[in-house]
Length: 98
Image 1: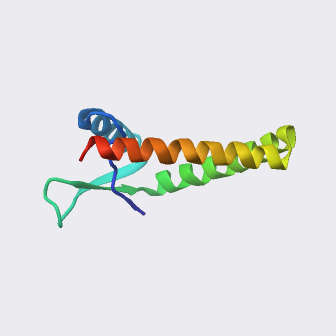
Image 2: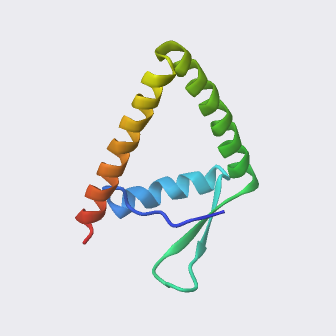
């Protein structure tokens, strides 16, 4: 899996520091992007894939627990509200770089 990290309203130095830390823990591998010499590709390592799988499993359990607490309809509304927030923030941050 390859990720092209986009600064999410954060300075590039902050993003680079986080990526270097993830690399030092063995979760990602940073490689030069042959198509763009200024960029780096971020690839999950085996350990990174394992962590992502663990996070997905935990996320499913949290979703089920919260849906049980709120009821399916209210939980669906909650999820949609979160998606709307993320979508709005992503668009706003993208405009900051134009």
